Image (cartoon, rainbow, N blue to C red; front, side, top):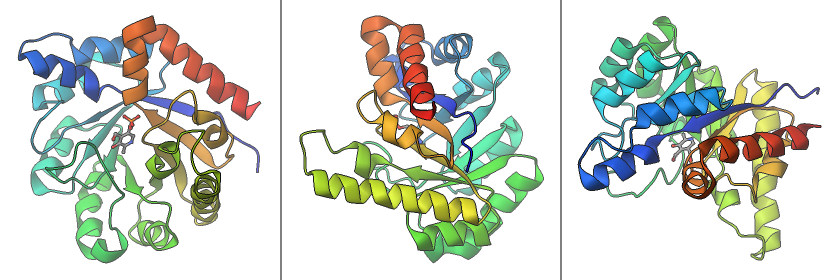
Length: 248
Ligand code: PXP
């Protein structure tokens, strides 16, 4: 298959993490979203968690207002989040699992075991015009269930692959990569758009970006960390360069 241009969604949650550590207004995640747009991001991703540990309700509304590129609103499948998403009317919603005690989104959504509820959850969002994606592990059962409930997009949690460092267990790392690659093929065969996210960095982005089925990467923590040292525009430019080089 011919690879399409790979989009870069920039997740700005951790600008809010830093702001909330001091309880004031700075640094401003809206400013980060605008700067990311000016620096070549194709979309902005933000996760309004149930416990509001980083992004808050007012941030989501302000980000939507401030940017001209698509907003990808990550949310748990709750009534509260569904209502907020319908008010905000983002370009896209990404349904993620959420557990209060986790530090970050640790695994994928159980779509196969929760099809009925999730299909009712995404229906109104789709009807309202949002492009819905399901954040899942690259497992056949989850991919097929996502297609069955009518989600047009799946985002694979690629953390299990990304968290291996380059010195680590090469065999296990290759097995995780094969799961992502095979899953991407299966999802594309089913007509699903494929995204990937979690743990992507300069070190590990190239093989993922080279998979021809992948249309979008969502990257946050690494880019914000890098931005502390070199600034957001150069951090983003380097990620973009690596993504383009992987596709060349
Ligand atoms: N995609 C989804 C659905 C996420 O929940 C997250 C954050 O956990 C990301 C992408 C970005 O991951 P990271 O911050 O590790 O780049």
